[in-house]
Length: 300
Image 1 (cartoon, rainbow, N blue to C red):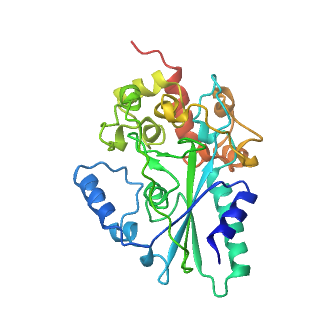
Image 2: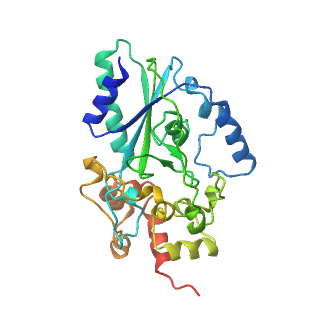
Image 3: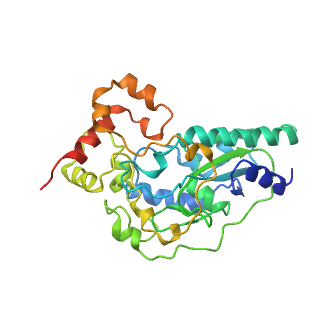
């Protein structure tokens, strides 16, 4: 199958950022991951097997390429929101998986014996590294992937497959290195050298189980978000004048505010029923309720 034909199909379903990465192994990434592990810059949400993170063939034995797609979700600014922008629309796990399946169904009609595995923020590979490797974006100092059209407001999905597509190359573009993301990060998670301590990231803290430390509570309270954090993206000059999303599921039936009184008055079961198709629901009602109580407190 011709890569141009695949790109045209992706465009037809609203996906303008597509690239092809090789199947490694990614030994340069391995060095970075080992360094992060040694420094304990991990959250426990990562794939445990290091080998699987650098070698797609351990996930799909006959892998020959990886199709990588950026899914833009930016719809504009909303000043009174208490959740991260990525949570406004339908759960991206559902949307990304559906779009990737459409791509695979299309290829399957064109390629005999097409074998593949789809991943939507739930796979063994490092999503952002795959986006970099496929040429659809480049790393910001805040560790986000920056795309030309949509800035860093993108989700990454990928398809490990057995078709030998012509590979794309990483872009030569780089982050402006203005340092704003480092300066304004409320958790002081960004180290200024393209590295970060994810345990200090407010997005992680807002999803963390159990009781938070007093310092974590104060930072969450100051940011006023009950789920996620957008500050490093909001101050980023690469996100000025970007295009809004073409994906309907991220533009329609939006939720921008989680109501404290509503959460207090519904059961866990009702929370799951009401918000099952939302990205903020995966940790359950209790985490949301805890965070709502924290941002309502008065700290000295």
